[in-house]
Image (cartoon, rainbow, N blue to C red; front, side, top):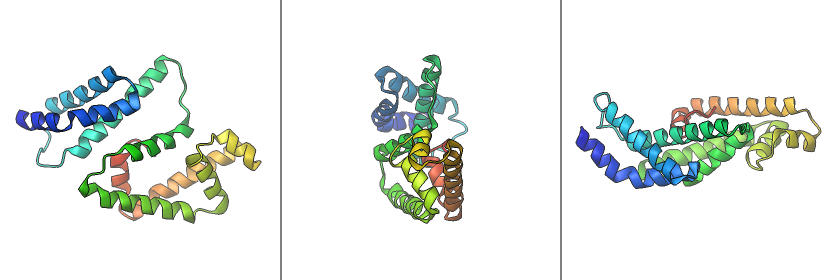
Length: 185
């Protein structure tokens, strides 16, 4: 089993470190994150089935640890989170995600279903969702531009995200979405 971990470390360490660095913007932190992931893998070596593909697990673990690092750093620096930036994080993640042969079809299906759903939203909900997610506008800016309340903007975004979750679930892509973007709802 330790041979399996060594092989995974040799195969994925560099790319996972670069992946973490993209988010945490700190070389030492990126190295620590990846080393922590492999250390935890080693601690759980008797529980893990190494016959299963480990790539998704490793990327997901590095993503989660990177997000935790960012969160902890922001809390320590007393910088508040802005939930409007979550979708930018997802977009950046999609652009940086290393697409392997076996994932490419699922990723294409996921993108197609997301676009189909977003296009099917009612006009106001669609407009608000696009302004928030594609144009990266903050809720208050959207509300000012459209002459509506911030609460209305928040409700429409929540409605769109909830509907998207249901749409992906109905089409069998929700688990793949969560595998890619663990923790985003």
